[in-house]
Length: 67
Image (cartoon, rainbow, N blue to C red; front, top):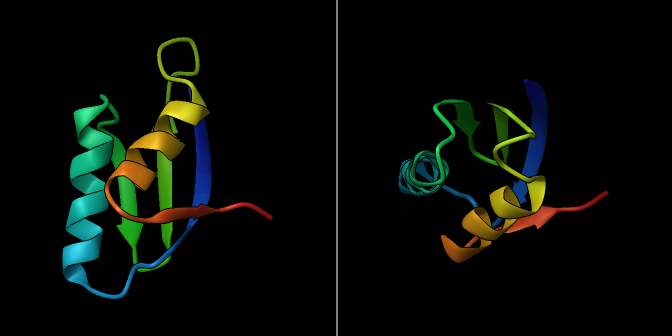
């Protein structure tokens, strides 16, 4: 299992948090903590690729901030 923190652009309210949580749950990520601007997630890299997580967040209408 891998735990990582993702910075997310475009979040401003509780609705944004719920949208990200829904997107993560939909792709099978059960363990997550989402706050405005960040998400800390734990996932199994053998089952879910990080690119799938990025895609789910972006399809929800937000942008993963790449450093």
